Length: 114
Image (cartoon, rainbow, N blue to C red):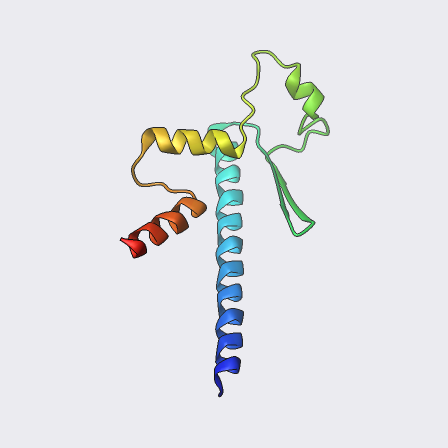
């Protein structure tokens, strides 16, 4: 094989491994949502959108579940609406083991340059 074929083959393998990792995370997330609903009695609604394809999970068969965003916003007590920036703040406050994917890349680049 010449170098161009090797490079293409390596890129294909990397894409496949990344897709497998994402699928594994998705399965774990669905399993955790199931466990929250089944064992802790919490109503759970999960929506995952990957490349325009949706995967959903509901812990209950009620027709009114999940509630609309308007219903959530008017609920009492006031709901906690979290976005990725909120998670980044939490992670940075607690420091330690858990790093978000973009932090892993930047810290690896910083280590390589040192």
